[in-house]
Image 1: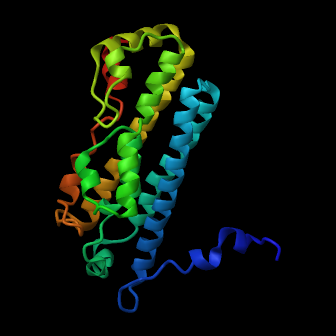
Image 2: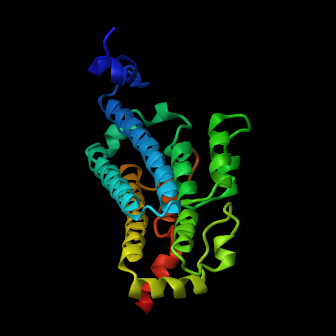
Image 3: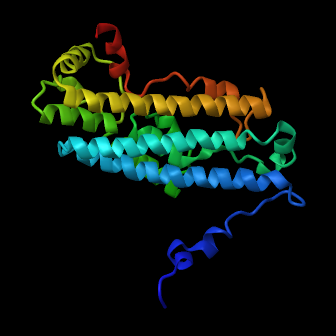
Length: 260
């Protein structure tokens, strides 16, 4: 049987995955489901691209790394734009089906936790949130113990002959990324003398800022929709999300701004 558009994309299965739980069902529940399923698909693609980026950086493929970073940044813009669609749903429209979510919450998205881990924002508690034996737990365990994008970037610098401090280059990859004054001194030197590597640094700053922008738009959308109510998964809702907004992924690339 020849491959068709529908069979290649497995549309019959894909379009059967939207199953509202509300009575009627409530009109806006379909939008809520579609938006969040699309988010998970984009998270899957971002993980695919970030894994590729790590390989390219460690192979000193500057041009291809830049190309991959451009794609990642473009996807992040799409993620932010999707919030505009969600915000067409009023608080009353959301409340018409919110109780059907029961304990379900975006806080439970293991793919988003994977994204945080691959970008260097690692917390053991995020792994332990999932029961032993679940696929989500296994995936997060693997991400927790593998080098992040930042670690691959440090190896990229070292591969180009730059004297990356040993304690930074050989750091515990399961630990959160911490600022390093000696590394910042090196980065300032790079910014002043090496435009090629500087351009990679700036795309990483764009990535960091892009994720912060998504977090900010997400928290404002939550505030706009449920105010100060607690999240469906038991989180503090908007209050919890706001605490994540200004946390940089690559602190050294922000710290050097005052020195340039």
